[in-house]
Length: 459
Image 1 (cartoon, one colour):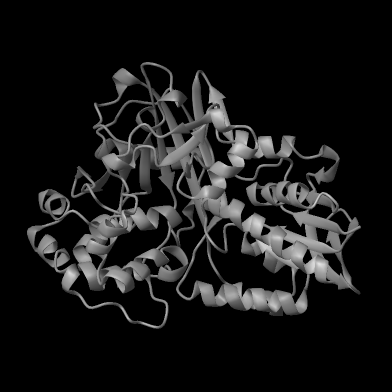
Image 2 (cartoon, one colour):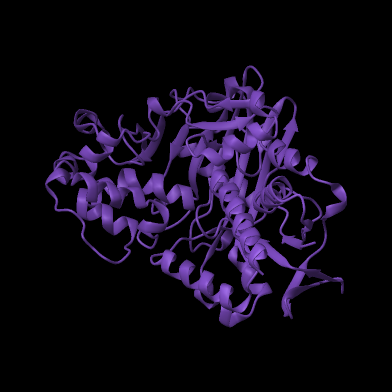
């Protein structure tokens, strides 16, 4: 009987174990997690009627892996869609709505762009030339920012596209890979000749507009119900917390995994369900060289609870974004009582701020009080908010967000080739590889199990 060891007890690891048990019940398996609890970055705090997410707060409904797993776990009746879709961008001392018809900041509605207060008349004129720009026939990968500047000009990219795209990865769009993050935009140009007409023709989901209502899902009672439900569906005796793997060594036709406490485990196959820094730590440097030096960004979220009367009247919407190059510590704020009203008691407000940019290191040393102070300083200007919160929750995620730099797919292809040659039967899943969202991590874990099972059937 084949025995599998899954390293990592976050969403990817739990999803891998669930998929393995569901599709190959004839295999035995164990899951090991270095922290004291399972679930990774998921954590919902409940206080005085508030629900506060310290990790992910939702996932895209259009990517099927997330909703499908929720249904499989029997949680479908707990799904809740976002109540409002419109988002704002803080620019030149004011909140401006994202133009209707925008797809990740890319305009598809000429009239909406012309009516927008975000872009100057010169910037609008340049952006509206996009349908006349020649197709992109570049063979090599390129940076997102460079791709969009060629098509729309710098002003629209810096004021609308950058806040949206850099916000997802906490990254620099002038370093981020087009093909690893948003390949659909390059494909749209190749198919339709330009983005404005192509995105409208393909009916791609708009972003940060009224039409974005219902695009996201969370779970009643908090999103940490997802990893908890997966863990509850698995045998407890197979899962070990406070168990840190330190090395994987090939041993004839199997593997020996060493642990910090001196223990060892034997396995016919291994799934490393973690970001690439764990992969680099566990395997030979020559094998993981393609991902050596690939950055991970430290992030923080700050949830501030208020009485409704203490907060200035906010426009209808989910919150706002700020360009990463703007002189603010925060990159975004969610108005939770508007986006997810079930998470906030009546006559109360909850503001969830996002802090952390690629290349910054101050979060790693800053106290919670210093992070809250930085957020409140931004809010005083952006929302004219000067009242002290009822309480706050700070979540700090060190080296949490992988950066998909230009040529990411080439590095990933070489990494897979190296591992197949040096460690046949070892597979990986997690945020570092083929998407950072919840559905991406679930789908990646399912693919890893499928590939491992195919390998084991052949040996």
